[in-house]
Amino acid sequence: MKDKKHNRRYFIKSTIAALAIGTVALWDKMIVTQKKIDVKNKVSLLFETNKQISFQDDFIIINKDDEVSVLSSRCTHLGCKINEYSNNQLLCPCHGSTFDLNGNATKGPAVRPLEKMDFEIDKDANRIVVIAGGNMRS
Ligand code: FES
Image (cartoon, rainbow, N blue to C red; front, side, top):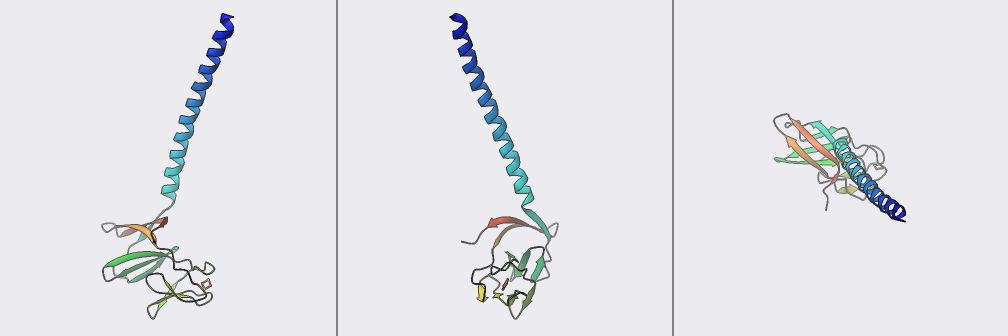
């Protein structure tokens, strides 16, 4: 009888210990995965201080009147890459949508604004680090 009780206690303690170790291991893995995602979502671009509009990768860097903003260059109509600026408008080459420098659609077919990106400027290195997925539009 004593052996049975001892075995049951041992089983319960072992199970609790295994669950605790598993939880800690899983938690640690989740944190490491999150760090990898965070690193993957940062894109470092050249910050050309002398250019008002700069198209780089999937982003449009706007540097106007000492104010910097970064927009996604993906058109909100069907996702074409916006790559032209003319007459104070960002132009989508696919179906002719236009956007102002705040990202607002000014001519369709697109109706939604371009995504505003979160970013950090490293002036010493002339880099701008865009945090993809860091939507700041409110
Ligand atoms: S994808 Fe830009 S207007 Fe259609």
